[in-house]
Amino acid sequence: MVYSLAYHSLRDSGAAEDVAQEVFLDLYKKLASIKSAAHLKHWLRKTAVHRTIDAVRRRKHPEVGLEQAPEPAVPAADPDPVLREKLQELVASLPAKPRMVVVLRFQEELELHEIAEVLEMPINSVKSSLQRSLGILREKIARCLGDVRV
Image (cartoon, rainbow, N blue to C red; front, side, top):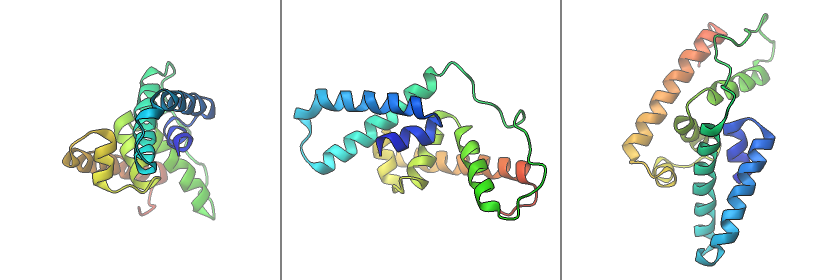
């Protein structure tokens, strides 16, 4: 879960491994304060999210913007792999916190109140962030893929 959260946000296996290592080092230091398995899972998820956001902010290399990315020349007969890859790229182009909201909602399948708890945000902020992020993604998909209905 820790590596997956980091990887889907950073899109770099080395950086995701570094984040996971930081999280598990923190866990080792705080192991005595963990009360139960549920507390451990919550603590790991919360710490992984915050460490991943920190890693995104520390990145020296800016992400390639959508305008600079090459457009596909011919639509594929089976759009699922292409669409999935493009969607992953577009999600990666979101700012750190909105990206994490999208990843937690759709990859980790957390409910809105759980996301609010993990990110320490009001639930209404999570809802509005998710709505804005989905709107941005719809616009970008429409620009990239043309008439594909999302």
